[in-house]
Length: 308
Image 1 (tube, rainbow, N blue to C red):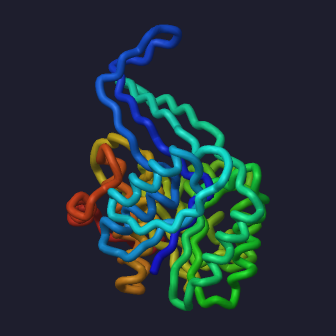
Image 2 (spheres, rainbow, N blue to C red):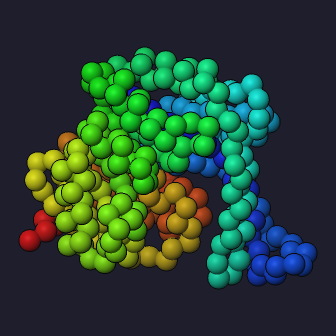
């Protein structure tokens, strides 16, 4: 079973506008309502790819109920912890003809009791399970929470993936995550540099290996992706050709595709290829990519190559 954890999920209210005019009344041409959050996105794409997955995390109030309903409608299993106080956040995405404006709200406070309950859920996982910790940590939780959980689970026989930024990611590295997936901007921020080439990505990805990560997957937008593996390989994947429609969730889709490929083949090259196809397919789609959309991209996507 693949479990995803999203500590601060949202209900994303998307509005399509011809042109956003600040200070005036704007009328939407179309609207949509989706569950949002990195771990939730991963679970949805995993489900599309035929993998068994359960979404964990915290929800609150009527918005939390709607988030859970959206996930259930998508076919995903959920075991959310319902908070007694507060309300899950609603994020508004205003998409005009040339750009998207996002209005992101804060989430509810996560009580100590609720945090303990999530840890109890995690300790029920069994050897061979996969745990994906994705997204930011709410202010009411310690920034070390991913590292703390990994310490508690170190003898559980799990593969743990961490998709986080800054100190939250760095503190998790000594606990040997199976995979971390920064994009090239996030990787550069960790070291105070600008990642401009695949060679840069490989060099600094290897530094994360030295700090404890077992595998490092760096997404690089139009430059594709670079994978540094625990067995010493550096694989490069060209980007897919296509028109980007909505890149929200593309990185999450890449994780879902990579882990699906890895669990099915235990081949890093095949995992990277499927991950890149899933990420691109979601970017080329209005919503998170379906199996058919991912397979269509995979057929035309060049295979990864070893960096010389």
